Length: 288
Image 1 (tube, one colour):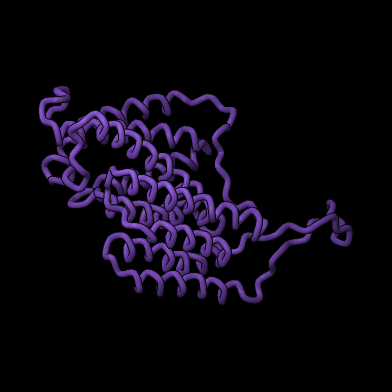
Image 2 (cartoon, one colour; image 1 turned 90 degrees about the horizontal axis):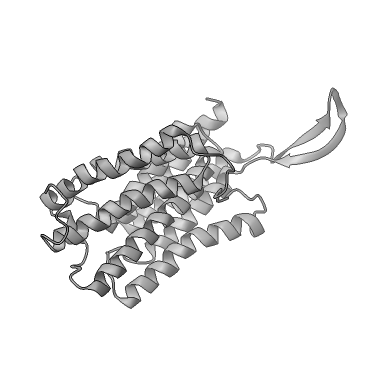
């Protein structure tokens, strides 16, 4: 790991530590302090560093053909901070009424869209992208993992939600309308998770540090959000490895489509378990 990468980790860790302050502990002012400190320290770390490197032809250093801007830790951490602040603007308590779903749509959509627009049109560095199409066929292990996600979810999730009582963190769904709303909400949030935590937070962090460090920090943000959403009690035992695996899979496949597919299969089981927990006997294929 280079000295620059080592210096980038402390300010990035401060910014990401704002997530548990916001979403787990509910300490808004602490979260703000951590964000300001992280971005401020990043600016100090980068002070005096070159902002671009010159591109020359072959062995002729005097023959300069252009410049390439270097990634800015300050800019990238400010994008992560901006996204988290937009998410924190609303309560993440799971509700299914029209106003709550509109509030989620605007806040979560803004948390992805605003940093993307700032990166592209204000910072002009295109640091955020969404690689839906990779033009590569999925390998055998990818198909096997999709099946494994369904099987593991079927075995583990009912026990977690029902034995811990975590299913009660979601509203009762006992009518076709509420069940449909839950289906849409769970799927939409699952897609958003990958757009924000993987394609935004993780991708921005990876520009400055090794994959393991970036993946660990994005998992802190990911798991903190899921905690406020409802994955409490011993939920982090499941959500921490899930968040880390999603980051690793994205690095391995470079495919947003694949990690979204994995997440949606996982969320399909979550949806079914929540319906089952609130309506015992409706879905008789679970073991618990």
